[in-house]
Length: 407
Image 1 (cartoon, rainbow, N blue to C red):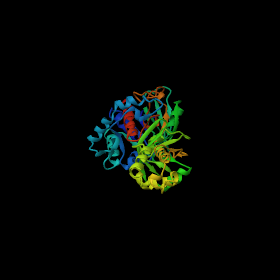
Image 2 (image 1 turned 180 degrees about the vertical axis):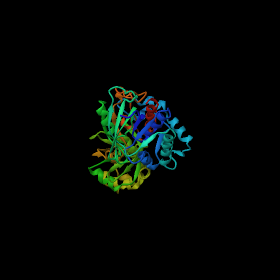
Image 3 (image 1 turned 30 degrees about the horizontal axis):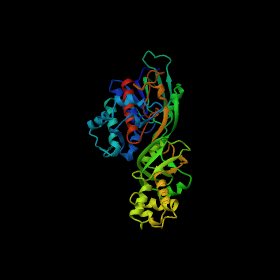
Image 4 (image 1 turned 60 degrees about the horizontal axis):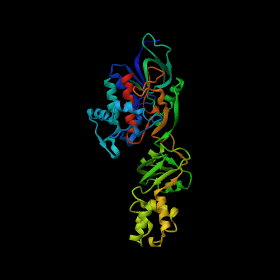
């Protein structure tokens, strides 16, 4: 077999893979990136509506889900959001801050991807697209040329084996398969005896099969600020009605904490006690109807749909003729709408995958697997999932950097 061709082979040309690749190459390592799609960075280009929410000003470990909530801390401290922002500013990337500290490209995600590709080119990283990793062979003992692994890859009809000293697995996960998501990293981990945490779709819209679906369909395209709660967590953000159910930032966030069969609580007017508000309006504006006073806080289209379902008997009555108990009942429904999703939309539209390669098998300081020297896992393939708002990209940069510094 040929001599050592590369020091480091990176499996996957997404955010974490590209970052790991040029970080390792800047240390003088000969690096190859293998990407199964026809081009690198597809998910980067599509994220954030094509603007890429590339990090957040307020990165904390509590913004991440994992069986080990402490695992992400070391990498996030080794390469911070400020480090990434400095790199983007060094390249002149125009960006803007939106609410909750979210940073987006001002023009296009293409500008950010171009920077990552430029860093790879400057560091002489080799990038092979349309290269599908078939298997990873761990050599029983390091060869004379220093090789510890052989990455077996299919490029069209050709089978190629790349000998290398280190492998960085940055294959992404199951979310949005059309952008290159796959379960390849999990299979590689399983083949090498590494444990996995059960996977499920995260940051994903909900679907309904009951009467809620008709309501959502009637309101499809409209949104309103809500507080969504489930599993002991709450998020206050916009909720979007769709033809299939509910989406929007509040729903995507809470989906990470929802389990099949669980109930979701939606507060449609999170800024006020709706029952007390309605009683106060009855005193102040006795001749007005419910729909009129509620229009201060809710979209009229939503009120029109709710009144036929929740308070048809009071719909045409002035507030003076509505008894206090009925108004309190409407208020309770508005503050604590109980919903039971039939399912999520699944990996097809999920922004991330929950679960993955168990962090117990990986060093938090280096991203290297404990049982296999020279084998690293980074990014979404690991059991680390960020909240919506740039946290998953920061995890990609941080974990990729740490692996690149140690591979």
